[in-house]
Image (cartoon, rainbow, N blue to C red; front, side):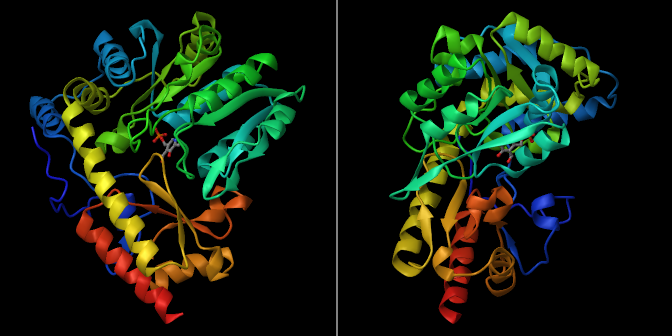
Length: 385
Ligand SMILES: Cc1ncc(COP(=O)(O)O)c(C=O)c1O
């Protein structure tokens, strides 16, 4: 099957957060969903189910667990037992359930910064403290300060390490060596790893390593959160999963989900996940070819025509981190510059943490023609400064 990623589908007027937040004259390249139509087998399955006309309480089937395990096995070589899979309404709720199950108010959660912004809300919102391990930008690539990491992990109140791999917003796909060092430090200091691997499929010419495949000890000390939403553009169906090899952790996690009464699956949630994971490898492969094309186009465009802005070359994700510090604007002004002068809506960097000041995040999961127009607008606005 071939998917046409250049197909134009108007998302305006569909209660779409990305497109219906800003005016018609703005190109939205912020929130992390793609502009691409879902795989046709997913659309067909949803239509067929919709035509049944009755959408009462669904039963919990084993198929969902098998689909999650199946994808991990075939795409990443992780031999997941379907028994390890816990249904969750999405990844962020899964992290909240883990926080409530495995930490107490006042405990520290170690987080690599800059970080996906909801992480800095859910930790304090639940009365836990963020212990920030700042990623270090060296020669255009972010690396881990392991000394600082160990200091944070060795604090007596450190209970959880929230890993985002691949990393949003800095685009790192962490190496086996980095992950093993993290894993071993967490074991040494008895800190549980919650690994958000939602961007695992979107990797440029590298291999994503599921955290739990590092070693038997690491597998026993982690909760891996996944969601096909980024790859197949189904974030609106609000269905994800946590994969937990350790039975004791799994039971405690399950209890936390139950205590929050968050186990109710939805008719239109589990179905697209199952179809996407079981039948749509072709789509994930072709998506990566298309995104690689967008990435190459953007890298060349910035290098040749907008050298004042440096692109942090991503190893993963369709969310690119733009170093705009040479424009010398404070965050509000930078945001306004892109929105009002260039007419493109991006995410302003300081919302990912203080170290994101001077950066902007751009989502390139759009049609090539839209990307080209957005870059032309940014170039014109920078040239006018
Ligand atoms: C790293 C990361 N985790 C989680 C999410 C949100 O996932 P969910 O909608 O499954 O809660 C996103 C969305 O952008 C993300 O980038």
